[in-house]
Length: 264
Image (tube, rainbow, N blue to C red; front, side, top):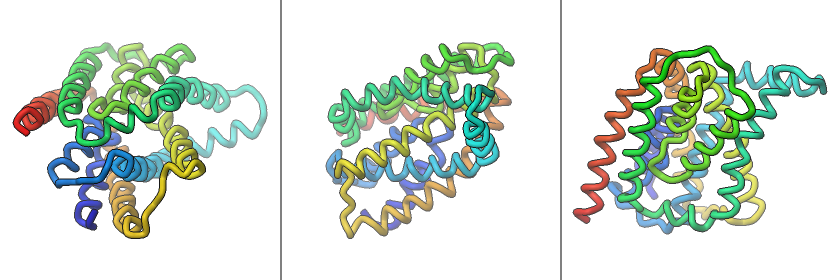
């Protein structure tokens, strides 16, 4: 992988992690167009590294909220921060279970499965259309909601299903305030990504080759910078209920991906 390819993929990841258009799906499409010949495991390693970059950008954008959460937790008593943290943990359970039980199967989806990506983008488009039509409310995320949103996050492990799109749409359809839905969606993925990186490093599943370090570092930086911009932009868009535009985009890209796959 050269530096230009790493930068392009990093920017794509940074933008599409927060915009509801599926970062993993766009990465697979970009790899196919750029002629990426890496095996699924290597492809997934690069994808995980880029996801880690956007997780860090999430922490930067929500640094005040994260600091308040940690401050509340260290008071060792029941408060809003403790409750929010437990909801985050509850939302992680479905993805953790699916990730551990079907890890190899999930890896196989990150090797140029363009037809799958196309159909999953159409599913994302449908979710966004439904969420855009939902009534605005001021409800908070409940523990039951957290688990249901977590199931959406687990399903979004398939390339082409937008994680932010699926979790925000599910939250809005459950009646959660749009601003709270976006905040919860972006923060709930951070522990999963950090945990995934730690697990793979300790188990040896991620094995960085010396020739890959610099391109991955460049891609990481590109994803981080693009993520800072996209995260802030997406919060504003969710408040204004503009998800239908992304639904149209996902539908168009999905149809193009299906056509590309069938022709090749």
